[in-house]
Image (cartoon, rainbow, N blue to C red; front, top):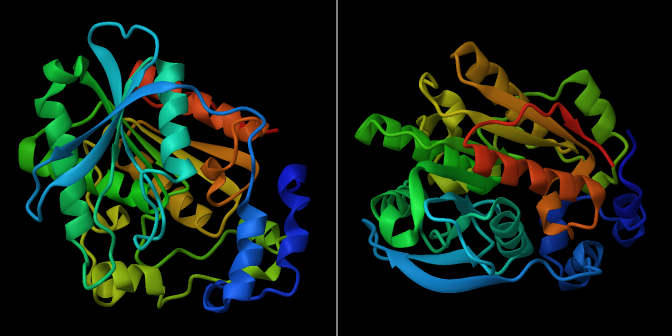
Length: 327
């Protein structure tokens, strides 16, 4: 289907922009990107009770934000450990993809949501530091299930973009190190390959409909991957980029791909590999959406349905049977 009209109606802010790297290097052009991204919701996301915590990690404490439903929580509630995106170099607990998603899933699933403020790959920080932070955070939640009022058998790990990468890597590490698996994984528009697979014919056609700013191919020398790794893509192991891992025994997994996203190729290839490994994996196409759509208000219909799918997965502790989400 076409790009969602609420998104396409804002493309005029990006007229003349051809390179994301060049745009972010120019304060004037950055303001235009911010205008494109500046969605104001018709209604605020659900209320929640929020408190801060921290998990001990090998690189120091890992800040956490814990969301509990404003209404009474059932005993042994389900839990989502959530990782924001940002290309490993940006993002935080206050970004909409983090805070709004946590609030929506907290209310929709009547779940405890633990949002993780992992260290970013800036100032000389590289893999495995963000990965180690994520593993430490999930282990902290697992070990404090009684204190948090959650069912240890109903812990789901999820994330968006770079956060989906960290989600998959942490699940693999905990499988191998501890023999433990979460109830489910949620991977929203994930980046799971250090070298991205080429787009399918249908994806290439979809990308051709976008403004030039969104058509830049990641290429072999993807700078975000190289920055995260602190070296070339060939240095990646399966915990850094899960597409290179043995996937047998991975938890039931929900992959949420944006229709108009070059990273869709990574999610599609990972889904196929996981299925061949015997993983209970479901891929859901979020129609009409671009990368990062969880930064949009839930009143945008595909975003609302996507949040409902995440909440359903957290509630049930397994991947959803849904096939596609449209407007």
